[in-house]
Length: 117
Length: 115
Image (spheres, each protein chain N blue to C red):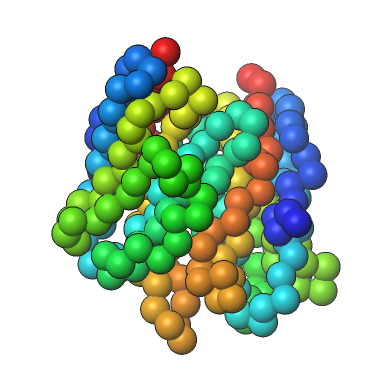
């Protein structure tokens, strides 16, 4: 079964530390999304890529968050420095989106649960 | 403005009862996609269904069925003969061409099925 793989599954860190979350999208998918889930805000889009190009990262705090896709098999989300309010579950999703055809099935990874103390 | 509204925050039923989850969406696009996802207590988001705006046929998959009505901008989800394993949070989501196919999620409905 093809699946989106995220690491780490759980991360506990102290305020001020750098956190890097990784995502391996499903082979052949051209679009990768990063979502954050909190009780207060629900599922929020942080950033997304198509064909590895960043298209929109307006959902991210620019001063501390960065998202990259160094190759087709890896997307990263980095927080530096981390703060307690960053505590959340971070989901990566991938799918095949084609102009004129539309959105295929979008699959989510199991999420990375981040706790910043 | 909220693009996807799931008015029911929580629903509690006894096993074998049917449960219907409401989803109302808002879009000006003529081409769009609607999704349902399930998030069990373990936390992962499980894809259930995708529907495009040109296909209003209702769909049934086992005990799950979906009713898409463009006239009321609704995409409701029914679980027939619910089971304890159906206990989860269910999210409805919208993907629009004008929004570059990004998913906009509703707030989710928590379904609790009691034995």
